[in-house]
Image (tube, rainbow, N blue to C red):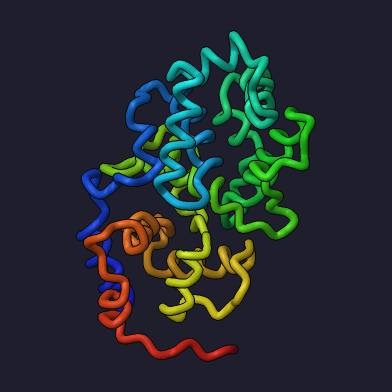
Length: 249
C-alpha cells in the first residue's frame, strides 16, 4: 500500500516544474559537468535552514564566482573558503571531483558510504581544515544529508536530477536524511529510530530499496515537496497511506 502511494506521489511531483524553490535549480544553468559538479557542491553545502535563505546564499556565492566556479577556483582562489580550496587541490590532482569520488568506490559495497567517507576525508585533508561544518564525517555517524543530496543530483539523470556522474550505480545511493524526511519516515513507520543519523539513513535507504531496488532515492524529491510546496498536503498523504502510530521495537 505504501509503495502504491509513493508511486502516486512520485507521478504527481517528480517533474521539473516542481523544482522551485530548491537549490537544485542552480545546476540547470551549467551543462558543462566540470562546472556542474562544483555548483552542486556549493549548493548542497549551503542547503540548510529556510529555503528562501538557501537560494539567496547559493545565488550570492555563485555571483561572487562570476557564475563560473571552475574558472574562479583555478585562476583565483585567494578568498575561497577552505572547502573550495580543498576542491581546487582535488581537481588539480584527479582532474575532477568525480574522478576523486570514483577512486574510493567499492564494487562490493552495498552503498556509496565507503566512497563518500573517502571523498570527505580527501576533501578535508586537501583543505587542511577539519573543523568545518561543511565537512560532516560519515565515519562519526553523521547522516551527511547535504552530500547525499549532492550525489542524488549528480548521479540520477531524469527530468529533475541533471546527473553527469554516470559511473556510480543508482542502487548505491543513500537517502538524504534531514529532520523533515526523518519525520515523514517516522510517520510512515519506515523507521522507529529517534536520531537522524547515518544508522537511520541506512535503515530508511534499505526500506526504499525494497520498493525500488535499482533506485532507492527515487522518492526523495517527491517526498520533500510535501514540506516545500504550498499546494502539497502532507496530512492527506499520510492518511492515504493508512498508517498506524509508530510502535517502538
